[in-house]
Image 1 (spheres, rainbow, N blue to C red):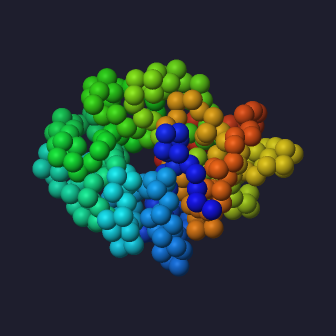
Image 2: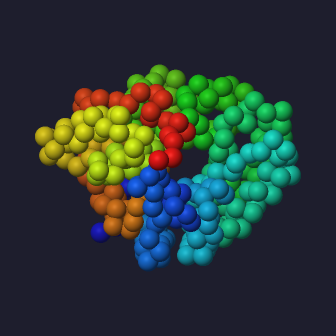
Image 3: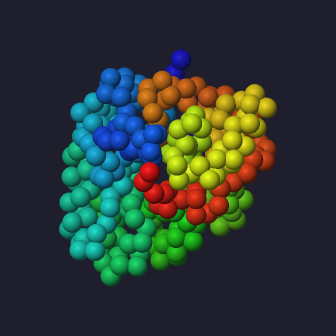
Length: 297
């Protein structure tokens, strides 16, 4: 049965960080199975309600899109570019053109700057000018920034109000932005804030035995979530998805997948109505929940 997710509601976006190389942490670090890639893109081509998220830093993921779905995902691919101190207008335009050539599409749905701290760089205006040019000539429909904090989004929006699309981490173990008035106001103004890290690199939906050592001091929180889900008789995956779906300011969800089977499971669940609206489980502190603070085992 084909998914009935409507573009007018939440955008469902499949992340590809693990398509070209291993992604994740510790024992959860995995590469998307090669036999599943062709099946995934075959489904993506016909399932026009689902979008795809990639980046020029995700190994060969852009190239895999081009190989398995050339000219079949126009305006359904979002990519991210990493900005360097010596980047210029020309290098940004070249980077986006190179990514578009990699994915073998005519146009991106969106291009986002991968590192929000570009705003503090002396070449910030050059970077943004390059993005605007690519939007003006039809290489991408939308432009924006991938951020970690709401205040980053607000600062960028205040300086460059034509950057309309953003990504922000949010999940059931990090609910600090669940009722954020600034984010709701942005949505009412026509800006799009898509959430990522819904499964917190898989730690929220995986077996607790696979929890990395540096998160084991917080194991009681993951255990609390698992126990609550068992008590209420729903899966951890549904608990995470329903939380993301209840956020009023949320425009879409970037979802990492481990294999084709999990992809179909997620799409199947998203066809079901939201059943969970109460999220009483404990949350991680702001340091632990940020993967930038995670250390190798």
